[in-house]
Image (cartoon, rainbow, N blue to C red; front, side, top):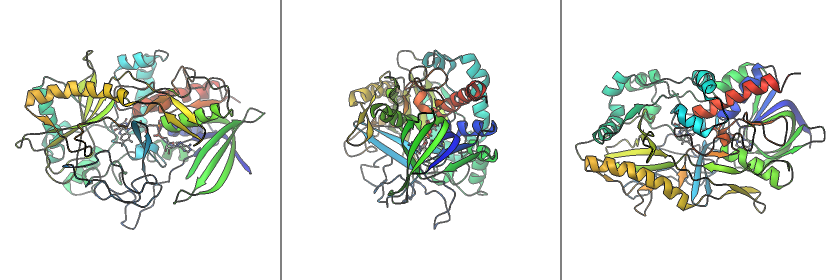
Length: 503
Ligand code: FAD
């Protein structure tokens, strides 16, 4: 097959990939970004690019015959999910034994589907997780750079207190306060000025129109509007879509050779392409990058990759749960899809939990308080290569999820006791499941910084091969992860461009 080549190639266009692309482009290095998902810029028959959670269609999910929303049921009824035509939709759910992982697919990766919560971790916890990184430099330079580039802003507290759209958050805050717990506002990359116009009826509703996990048509500063737009603006970056990199090898001259499958809207492989590059940046995310490297090591394509490739993976301690409120504590039929507050009990060393107060926008009053708890679960798992399916298998177990559940339960048992409330049993399928512990929004690790790579994301055993995504984070960061992933990528790019790419 003919080989197309570029000085630098970036695999994936999520946070890690987008930062790499922009900084390479600004440095004058011609760069090709290869993304397996679509470019989401074309409206469907309804005039919208993305579909809402209320009326999911084929655009919702990545090649599924039925949607797989995190909340499987409501009053035990299977009313949430819908049959759909398989299509390269925006949200993927990848299934392993006892754990599934939600991922964004398309130009912008997870930024297309996530909740926009833009949280900087506690410096002390960051330092604990990244002993090889200069935390002072991170908090002085790279976190501020990441936040500025991502367009992080905060909800106006006065508006928050008065709007019906955040009543659900204020109720959860009241219950946390009654328990003696601290709550904190959480910044966001959703434009709150736009949201206020949505509420006033002067802008098309997006966050206030039940749009989030299948994409937002307005208001959200996803990567295609920030880093990737700037990257394309350098004139040195191009993005190719609907191509999934399958294999990475190294040629005799030290350059990298990639094999990529080009797919169509049915998922059929219509072409297999080869790419060559001098510098290769992996931004496929914790799952994508780790699978590529585990496969490369085990098939002998990149045999010098070390044993840490595939190890150190965690869920960021994710557990979802709902509480049932008293009849007088209405949460409101109208709920913004963008969370703006968390219950911060991370400093409780006996049971550290940060719980985001999550919306459940159904358009009707349901008295549910929903949470995504991030627990300090120390359990980690590894990926192994399965030759029969040419894919990576995750060795996570239900017992490892039970550790997260126990921590979330401790906190929410306290909240229920203080407020004389109970859990909701009807949200996660037929089995009266209270804690959704079988999925994560925050896959982290697999190629941990300082282990699979040096302290700057340079892959050990190979030169000019870099990782810039969430696979570097050692399984837990205590808060929602994209600001950390972005800041670490900024740090890697500053170092690599200063030291490795000089002509
Ligand atoms: P990704 O953003 O996952 O990007 C990887 C990209 O690479 C994808 O576009 C993928 O299609 C592509 N790719 C992968 N493999 C290949 C391949 N072989 N060939 C070509 N392309 C490939 N985090 C927060 O901080 N705040 C939140 O509010 C929040 N909410 C979330 C809500 C949901 C529903 C989900 C799913 C996630 C949420 N997250 C949130 C998590 C956050 O989105 C991720 O941590 C982040 O996107 C990870 O960034 P990344 O660069 O590591 O990889």
